[in-house]
Image (cartoon, rainbow, N blue to C red; front, side, top):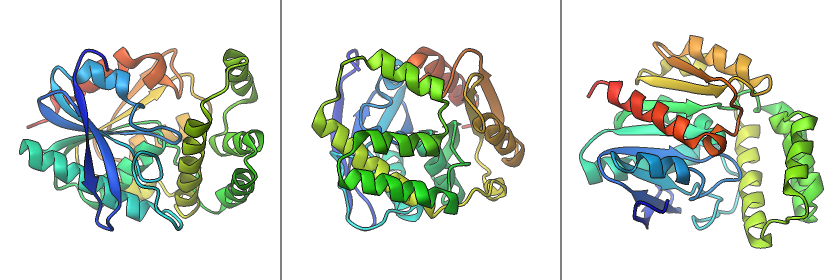
Length: 279
């Protein structure tokens, strides 16, 4: 985000939760929603590539600093209210309907939001929503994660998360090898861990029912990597058949980390989609 100036502002949700939103660029408004373990920085490189033509809003979701971390169990219902508040702020600022973009958990949240309130939305674009990771089967993993979180056991937390996301063992090992002796900043690691805990709470109360997304009527783009592990491909293919008129793009050579490994590809795909959406 070096080439375009950005500034952070507050948006208050319906229950008084204070959300910090990073804004940059000018043009039609785009709200970019981060996944689990993310934050204000998550969409940064993609946003930098879009900032010449769009006004970008990058919220830190509740539970992720510097936004508020409310007490109690989190649900998609309260987080939908958060996202609606951000969308309304973007609509009010620009006077134009909003392109909503979400990745991973943020993609699931974006689906919930588009199905709940699409009045201010011009389009919906999602990258690899983990719709398979929800409901009662997540509860034991949530319990293991919470216990590991309480005793500050990073390895046990990571093991529980890998079970939720179903990342293949060889990919986990490759990440560990790439990290080497580097250790994350303890404060940042704890902030991410808190956010993950709240996301798991919401997922455990959610459903794996894909048919419910058939009510989404805004122009929709579904993006995925050809190299992402199952059950993500099967899940995204089912979603493509469920949302009326949804467009599906599968990027060769990319996986669940495409927003980091191929930001220009993601930005170009989004920019092309935005220009083709009816005004």
